[in-house]
Length: 252
Image (cartoon, rainbow, N blue to C red; front, top):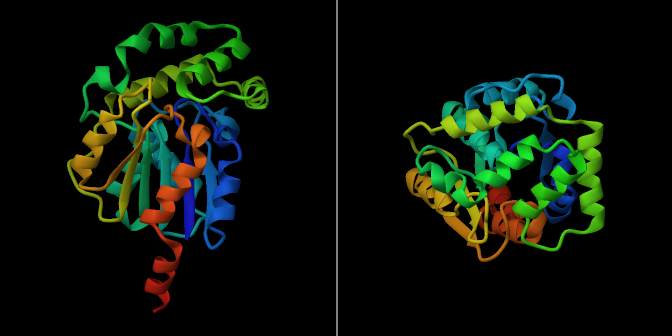
C-alpha cells in the first residue's frame, strides 16, 4: 500500500528526518511518500491557505500521480489535513493515522496549552532563525536533541525559510478547524503523548471518541513523536495495520 506523510505547522518533509526510511525498512511491502504543504519546503513559494480545506485540496491535486486509495499519516496540522481528506473523499483513503493532532472538538486552552502562549508568540517574532529552531525543538521534543538534528533543522530553515505570514495563516486555519461530524469509513488510529507540552493529549482523546477509533498514548514523548520515539510509532502501525493480514485479505 502507498502511504502519504503530512507534517505539521511550518514544518516540511525534511523535518521527518530518517523516519520515512525507518518506515520503509520496517514495512518493505509498503511505499511511503511525503508532501510539503503550501508555504513550506518545495512549496514555499505558494501562499498557505487560511483553511484546512484549502490545504486538503492542494494535497489532493499534488498527489494525483499516487495510486488510490492511500494510507494517510498526519502529524499535528498535517493530521487535520489528513482527517479532512479522509472524511470528504473516503474513496481516496485506505487507512488514517493522526499523531498529536486536535480539532474544534477540544477547548482552545487544550489545543495550545496556556503555559506556551507567550513562548509561541516569542518564537513568531524571533528574528534569529537558528535560535527559533532551537526553541521549537525545545518545545516539541522531550528527548535530548543531538547537535546533528539541531543543525539539520537550522539548515532547513536557512535554505527554505517559511514566511511569518504563512505561519500565521496556518495557525489561523488550525485554530478554526472542526472536523465534520461523521465517523471515518476506513480503519483509523489516533496517537498522542501524555508528555506533549504544546497540545494536551486529551485533544487526541476527544478526536478518538468522536471518530470512534482506538487511541494509543505514549507515556513521555513530546509533541514531535516521530522525533522522540519513532520505533514506538512504527510498533503501533504494525499492530493496527499489519502488512501480512492486509496482504492476505487482498489476495485470499
